[in-house]
Length: 536
Image 1: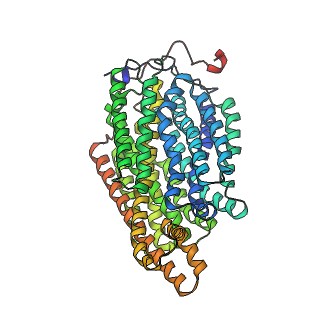
Image 2 (image 1 turned 30 degrees about the vertical axis):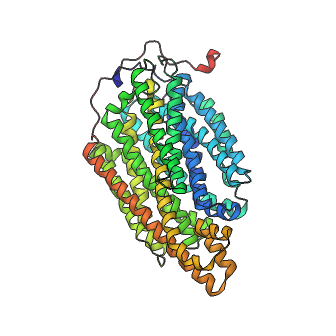
């Protein structure tokens, strides 16, 4: 197999006037990234509103969240490879345009099905943006110390998006219709398109191998089938024939993808990357961290609104300290890596996430915000430690010509881990909730649509309880909240176990320091030309 460090190297990226311009370019990339994370957190706060406005069940809420992840992860490798080949800025700006257009579509979706389709379109745009931002940063910041700081700020931006999203979502939902949470993306997308063209340097791999259409198709089909099975498992059952068939087919196609990439002379993804433990175990650590993070956010926004009775805005304010801590800690993570090493920082961060999930899983019906805020803060602290440290480990192993597809591998791990977290934790919540609610409701022989609404989500049960009123309404409310808390506790306990396993893996296998290698000689031909100036 071709060694990672023997791959053709890209020409140095133009620095557009020096160090100041590098940091200006970073600002443009981070602000554009903001809309990707902002959208996710705004959506989480809006989930209870979608239950009321569109009649969405818990299962449909999972699809609204995970349709984005399905398109995002399924196309990430192809988008990253295309960025390396055709120009990273070009693919990034195309992704911004697609993301903005799909956001407008989502804002005017009149049904759950249309919203899920629009969210898929947003995932396509995000798949084009995310790997391009990281690869451009890696190309522009060649000095390892500067790169660590830049990646720390990149990760902090994600935390800032999480922090702003719930509050912005709450404000918008209090004053406008639910579609406004998607309209907020459009000004960012338009500004990003203009600023990227003016301020972000273009780069690509001048020695890129010819396209790999077979690898592209296999990766899309394999990841798509696997993610579909993960997302549908809570709906159809983990032992369902169609779920097992789709999941098995997805794994089989991914095996074919690996065999093809090993055999072909022009692989889309150089599998030699995974031979470096700093790359392979960093991607695994991020996936396991995101399992708990995404799953916890999915249930916590419902708990704060339905369980504790907060409005969308009040929920956003109460999530703010969590995301703020993530944004505060992330830039400090690179300094901790220099002192303690990647292994210690990533492993400790995963243990902190596990502790937060465990504390949250102990919440009861009588719990207050003060009883759960400690666990929520631990989630933010842990993510702020893990993400920048793992990203620096991962990106530091990549040759300059392959930063796009390499960073896409990280994006796939994030989306797979997140989608699996929402699916598994959401499935455990739904299953436990329905098992607890079913027996008390059985003697009443409720109409089918009413029964589906009550069993479909806590929001549906609380809405019926308000209509019924009196003693019956109060009993239904008590049963529903108790069942929801039991399901939430089960799901978050599993999340804590997964994060603990990730910490053990990081401590056992993730190297603390990069190997010392001789940097490749500078390309005498000079900077990579702007593809737009070549008449492409």
